[in-house]
Image: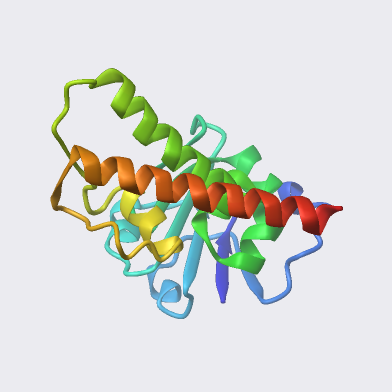
Length: 185
């Protein structure tokens, strides 16, 4: 179940997917233990990020003062309020943090970003000999979401291994894009 801690009901107008969600307008750390996902607006009274960081749950902080999005760790996302509510119903269905960022086609868009990050690294580091997918980063979250078990975290890999992973990710992107095309036809 999801707990939504929101300071105003106005932002919730027109959102039709609020079943199985408790909405409160106060920050109560004792209440957090009963939920698998906690979403908190940063302007809520008594907001305490440290308490949220200590939770072993998925946590989303949203606010108009956050530009875009970023992960503080693999289960802690900060995101712009407009993006949050734009993709909130999709997130409720999937319970995947990436769906808050990318919306309906979040799996495909996430893999595209992953591929782009590797390509960017390669382009800007033409002489590299090795690479490392670091734990507690975007990479770990992507690897876990897609069960990319062959990609090892916190191990230095050789250039040829990275190229192999990149080709594999490209293959997944093509496959997913084809599936999306067929299902939307």
